[in-house]
Image 1: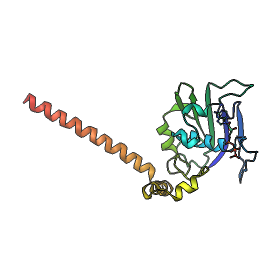
Image 2: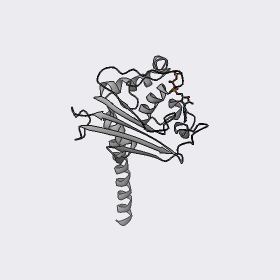
Image 3: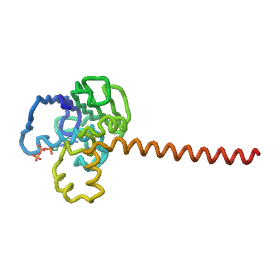
Image 4: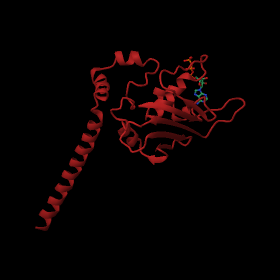
Length: 199
Ligand code: ATP
């Protein structure tokens, strides 16, 4: 699956709408220190569901919204869209191109979209689970991440192997299933209690 294009607006140093297109093969992004190269990989991880703003080199969620310069006012929101080629239907949706969008406002309100339709963060996790480009995948390796992976605990490293092996989607569904069983058992207990009172 190929990342075809990304659009950023109001994300960190990208105040204006900025479009990056990725051709087949390797794309290198070069620029002086502090010009925003790492902000691009931060943006990719953010859209894919990174919830911990520290992992995006910020302190609070507002830090990912363009904070203004001497000449420019701060932006009220940040929005990033990733366009994926899905002609091989690796993503389990009918579309041949999938656009995933995340938007955040200064109020902290966050929105997610798949092909412009509002969705939950969980829908994005499920869509990309086991594709190798999900939230915890190795597709984006940020600065210091190599050290972190090498120094990670066995349980943390196991999550990486599970994503690569393609079982994290099933683990998530199993957890949902177990939760529903627990709720149903709880309801059954209540019904039994009520029946015994009625008898
Ligand atoms: P290096 O080569 O040194 O790693 P880089 O090209 O990867 O640098 P980044 O770390 O991506 O650069 O970008 C840092 C720049 O982004 C800084 O100039 C910083 O002021 C700017 N920046 C970060 N967050 C915001 C924000 N919320 N609003 C405006 N600018 C921001």
